[in-house]
View 1: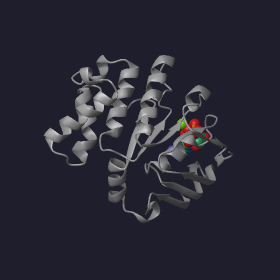
View 2 (view 1 turned 120 degrees about the vertical axis):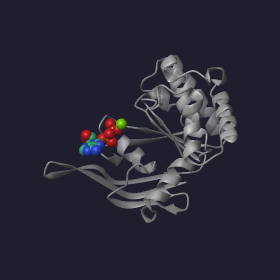
View 3 (view 1 turned 135 degrees about the vertical axis):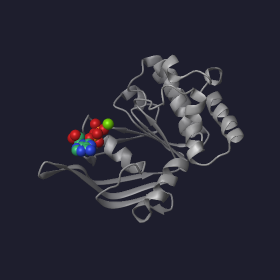
Length: 220
Ligand code: ADP
Ligand code: MG
C-alpha cells in the first residue's frame, strides 16, 4: 500500500540546507497498524507529511497503492488526500464554531457529496466514535477527547484506505488516549490501514509493528 525507497528531504536554513530525511525506506501493507516512533526532531512529522501527500520528497520513490506520487498533478494529489487518506492531528484541527456534524461533513463538501448523503454519512461516522448524541454541539463545547473523536469521524467519512495520525494522543489524558486507541483498533479490524506517530510506548503497543526513526533514518 505504501512503498518508499531512497526518500530524502532537506530544508533550507539561511544559506545552508539541513537534511531531515536521509534515504528512508518504508514498506507498509494494506491492513497494517503501524506506529512510527523516534525522538523529537527525528523527522517523524516530515515523513508523515510525505506519506500523506501534504509535502513532497526532494528525491526518492513513493508509490501509494499503484500511484507514483512524483507523477501526479497538484489537483490529483488533492483528490488523493481527500478520498484515499484520512488525517488525525495532535491538535484536532477542527473548526471551533461550527457543529461536530458540520466539521465531519466538510471533507464530503470538498468531494461534492450531496447534502442528504453527507448528513447521513457524518452521523454514521459520529456513531462509530460514540458521539452521535453530540452531533449538534460545537468543538468549543467538548472535551479534548471528544474533539479528537470528532476529528477521527471526519477522517473516515470519505471511506479512506489509510488513516494517518500524527501524535493523535499527544494532547490527551490516559483514559481518552485509550479510547482513541480502541477506535483505531476497531477501524483497523474493519480493514483500514493505520499509520500513527507516537513517542509513548503504551500507545505504540496498540500497533502491530513499530518503525523507529532517528536522525532522519529508519533504524528498525
Ligand atoms: P518530529 O516530528 O520527529 O519531531 P519533524 O519532522 O517535525 O520531527 O522535524 C525534523 C527536523 O526538521 C527538525 O530539526 C525540524 O526543525 C526540521 N524542520 C521541520 N519542518 C521544517 C521546515 N518547514 N523548515 C525548516 N526546518 C524544518
Ligand atoms: Mg512531529
